[in-house]
Length: 389
Image (cartoon, rainbow, N blue to C red; front, side, top):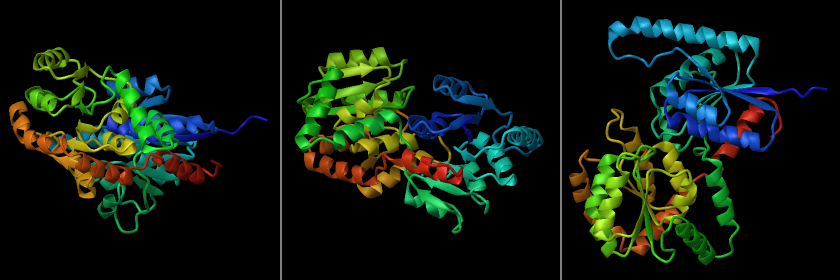
């Protein structure tokens, strides 16, 4: 007898932040060998095709457009919206999804809207502290099956009757694996030894503290420029650096560190981010929701410089959650490397020389992290689909 397979539909995309948390759930469903087929209704942007293609998830691009601010563009938006909703409805009539998950971004709207109209169990995945425009609108629907939120503060942005599940933000398998290995170690010294071996794998000294500096996958020039100017101070504090610069600044940052005498491993990027974070004693980063979930999963203190060009400042609100818990320090990216270095200097002077402060931040990060978020969300989806987990 042929096994019945359930169709799980995810919707959204356009950025890694709208793809990676959802794909962490897909990864877990596959690990468990569940009878599930997955499709991702997404944008036509190259990042969606590239990311989904690499993990062999079916991509179904939609023609929907972002909601325009100019009134004369509304008719075109409405035309594309209706076209996309109709395309989703046709697809769902041909094969009815067991569940639908809106992963954020404007492409999540039509599949979620069509799914709710057809009575399909439909959820939202909302890793940011403050929901974006699409999730705020969709979250008002009384027939929504639930919202998966990273933090409790998100409840205030949805109606009181909304079913908000504070699950955390799903992290990739590599992060779950490294956390599981660390949890099985008997002593804090064994955990430190594990971190030391990972430092060695990045050509760093296992006996010295290390700072991870990252500006997301493309790097961040204003962060790179700041740390070129701070290299002498970092070296004088006895620290070393693992710096992910992005391709454009790799050579320049490498040469600046070499001239300063700072011990550093400088890479354009790494696909070993879980190991890089676990090896670090302090992380300097943007404040994207999935990045923060990863920092919290490994329980590391952080200095956060949110991306400064978002009008809604959603990365700032994400970082604020960590600051209030005592897990991070939050600074504005002043859009200038020299100004960033100036404001960063007193912060580094304190934290690099204050192991007790860093340890308190570690404890706070561990308390806020939810590395099992993917498992909790997968369980909810399987229950809604009427299948075992």
